[in-house]
Amino acid sequence: MPHATDLSLLQLRDAIARRSLSAVEATTAYLDRIDQLNPRLNALHEVYRQRALRHAGQVDAGEITGPLAGVPVVIKDNMCTDYGHTTCSSKMLADFAAPYTATAVTRLEEAGAIVLGKSVMDEFAMGSSTEHSACGVVKNPWATDYVPGGSSGGSAAAVAGGLAPAALGSDTGGSIRQPAALTGTVGLKPTYGRVSRWGLVAFASSLDQIGTFTRDVEDAALLLGVIAGHDPLDSTSANEPVDDYLVAVTTPPPADGKLRIGLPREYLSDANHPAVATMMEEAIAAFTGTGAEVVDVSLPHTQYGIPTYYIVCTAEASSNLARYDGVRYGHRSDKAEDLIDLYSRSRAEGFGPEVKRRIMLGTYALSSGYYDAYYLRALKARRLIKGDFDAAFAKCDVILCPTTTGPAFKLGAKTDDPLTMYLNDVYTVNCNLAGLPGISLPGGLAKVDDVNLPVGLQLMGPAFAEAKLLRVAKLYQSLTEHHLQRPPVM
Image (cartoon, rainbow, N blue to C red):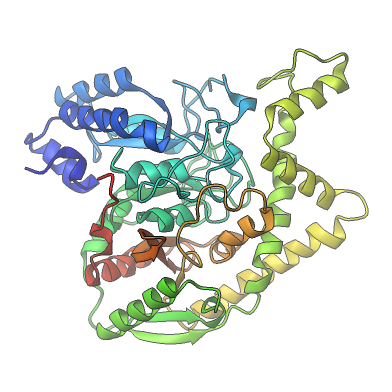
């Protein structure tokens, strides 16, 4: 039998269920893997060894059951748990212990999953490379002098490096799909409202969405089926029926329905790396080879996605992060002379440079005299972007495009150039602005400086059409072997 860390989430679950592998053996194998590789990758900030082994023992004893019984997972460190710490990889929350557990994590554990630990992230989920972290930079398992993407880079690196078979992340403007593309994993961002955000530390509340990292599409379907669904604790949670996504991806599409793949001309840019262009050509050929129809669609307001996103997200971040004032919880300066000084010093000491930058941008956009010129105009542009997708989906079932313009870049290459860093999300932000589901799939490898680095293929679908999106993703996966490629550390 293959080693536990070589099995997919579904294979691992089934092996534990039929007793050919115990939950304790599987959990121990991953904990040993973490001990071996985490010092090199810095993917995990906190590991719950004793708790994980205790729960694994309860699975083996039949005391814990469910569709994920005994399967180890990793959680991004902006999801509250009533055990360990929830730090958002920030000095501001370095010692924060949450009094409750996020709904998505609760649903995982109620399904029998074993939480191994929490992953390193860009501070408060603000970044595209997981270099903006008080816990140190995360390294890409494919080449440790390259970034894994961000802000969920720790979760992506954990799955790519074999530290866990699956992980949860959050996606505000591409923070699941972008690191999935750069690490060769499957990253799924569901429709806004499909998965409860209760217990997720807020960055930009109208954009944030919890999603998954896995090694293949079936695992993504299995995981989404567990965490999706209405939550009365979250006012933005949608009361929409949840499909059996695993059945959806393993059921062939109707023979009488022709799949229509939308190809947005705005995403076929000369800025794309040659490997990305080749990936797109091969994907189009693969889909048409199955009888699918590739149709030309236009998303004319694509160029406004980045400026719109960075006005909306920074404005919401400015509001959400106002609560960290050194009084109620979080870092508190011991050098303050009065209340105003306490606020100023606590925030200056607790927040990192990128968080400060975004707070200042958002505060400016919301300030008197600039609100209409920036924030209100951004909301109007956001509506136009949503309208573009509505028109496109009238012509096609899903949209096919790259996840990023190219493979990962070297650590430190863009940390002093915020605008260039922000452009890493050019193909992902509009999906969040429109509240739509998107998935990044391994699209092959690019040769860069004598190392092989992954590139990602993105599919986007209409709101709450995750079943259709996953079915098309599974079709692409069945036509390639990219998802079987593993980084050197594995």
